[in-house]
Image (cartoon, rainbow, N blue to C red):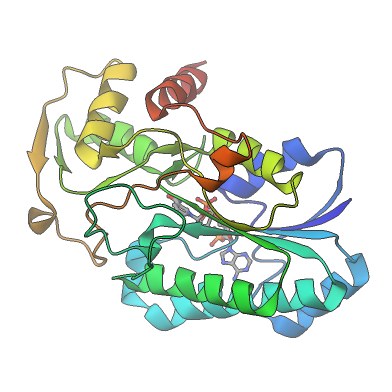
Length: 279
Ligand SMILES: NC(=O)c1ccc[n+]([C@@H]2O[C@H](COP(=O)([O-])OP(=O)(O)OC[C@H]3O[C@@H](n4cnc5c(N)ncnc54)[C@H](OP(=O)(O)O)[C@@H]3O)[C@@H](O)[C@H]2O)c1
């Protein structure tokens, strides 16, 4: 089939590309294409006539979104509106990649697909707006929420921890932010399985298990041979940043698991990622 893939240069987009070789894929990313340009996107879709639009493109800098909420809404909300309008114009299915930050983090158990959304920061609000447009403009859509993504070469937590460990020789990491570390290679495979089902709806796809940022960092240091680096636990209150992350926002996979789509435990995935990074 013909697939239009937004954000094909990002962590998830470029990991999806080699898994889609059986299909004809057209990538849409900056600077050549901007999803906020509605007319250009509609023209591209009408020309290419995709059967499916995969939409991971987003303004993913959470602190940048907090500093510029209007831009966050323009890209993640209205950009997704444009992608959904393009899908509607050519009668394509759409898969929108969303985030655990649509939840407020005041839960005590992982969030299921049916939990009420209530974002507490600009990034979460803009991504939820993207969900709204997807749900209201289309009938054949998948919304896939995920969390704490990392892929080789991306802007992500494991790379940052290793970089800071080597530069500073010690680290302070928060204990009161909890979610699911997720290896993009695993997520990409799960998305490919999901699009084969045509079982439209809302899904939570992350590696299995939960961790605090502190536990995630501890495992990164252990698996990368850096246990000699002192790691100090701190709280979010002690960590200055522009955005306020949800404190406890792990996702529970109920809907995709019912289709037989499950991801392995995050520790196994992280071990493979770090081993491949060392080869
Ligand atoms: N990363 C995470 O931890 C995480 C967690 C939960 C959910 N998600 C969601 O998962 C999806 C994929 O994340 P990712 O980590 O792969 O993101 P990423 O690496 O930041 O990739 C996003 C891609 O979209 C591009 N993009 C940004 N604005 C655009 C625009 N206006 N038009 C066209 N392309 C644009 C980016 O280009 P530039 O790099 O030039 O800006 C980048 O190539 C996103 O929808 C994100 O919200 C991510």
